[in-house]
Length: 534
Image (cartoon, rainbow, N blue to C red; front, side):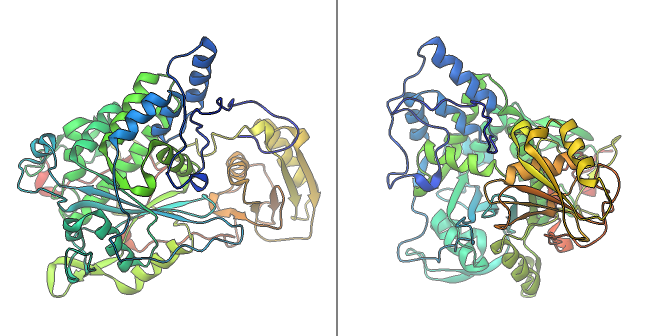
């Protein structure tokens, strides 16, 4: 990524007119949802080299790799994707208001369904007693902040009791939220909107076969369990420690309900968060490969797995969405669960814990990031490992030698700006693109950045060890600016116990929400006592 200034490096040659462009912006799509093209597979050695060069750059959105493979394959993948209306006829929702920079947040509802809509689903699900739309085994709202600096992924327990609106084929009723899927994904979108007040911009639905195909295409996902286990309900059998699960075993893992933690659906959600965190890191790793066949198989499996709203129909829309999602650094993605309490009318069900749930909905709506601090019971350390280590690739798309930044010394200690400039230069930044200055004393070190420099700010913060929670988007700064406060008067790596309040303090999730940061590795799912194999 080029940060500005006179130096440039050509990372991507725009394709000839008519071919698919990987830089497609979702906001620039026409009413048809995608741009039409005349791209071709194969081509000259030069064209093939461009494809390989592009895939080497890669993104976590593995679907996006097909953009360099020609129109034929794009149209083939387009045909894989099923799509329907976002909302039922007659139901509307308010739009998200843009922030002061004109950027808008995005909420995507991800649904995992138990519908047996194919012979493969019937076989994987054990029977065909559930048909049609089925119920939702997984329901998560993926929130992308307006400036794409953070993402909160909130699970909604499937046993949550709530009001399901009249979706045209049913009368409004009070019941389990997952039952709304009987009236289609659009009804579930309307139900989640009614429950949370969050505007749902898109939905993505995945069935049993999709989980199997995606895990196979990735070559498996590494997961860890605290003890050797066998769950008779799902069929999952694992040894203690880390196992790479794929195919049917991956499905058994994400569906296991009684085998983890307290044996409830809420324990399953904790396990799913750890699985998805591992999958995010696996996807971002695979995206850096140049094996076109492998990347295409992932894209093919992903698109076959999906049903989406009409606004996401077409591969180019998905390319844009996943490229947008990939702008969020891994260590700024946090999984939480909606705060809940047992339903007094039926202790086998749950209801939102009103005060805490409303607070979480408000935080998400207002782009307040969650700290992702692991609660004491959310996971255990992997056998034989130390504490979790954050993923180091959060700003990997930035070319550090082209980042322009300013270091302002507000400590009152002479030479602090020069010291940090030298540290950045040692980390690969260009001294020609770094400037220094002195300002009046301030207590807290903060990295300020304009709206189009979030990735560059993350790179600077990573190099200096400044927490991502101390990055602040501000229209007062035209370039990345590090204000070095009195909490950092010595050294070139930000002290872990730096004093002062965080400039953009992240919210702490309620204990029952079990917040998990996606960059946290070495997490082991706690096996329920009844499923431990001695």
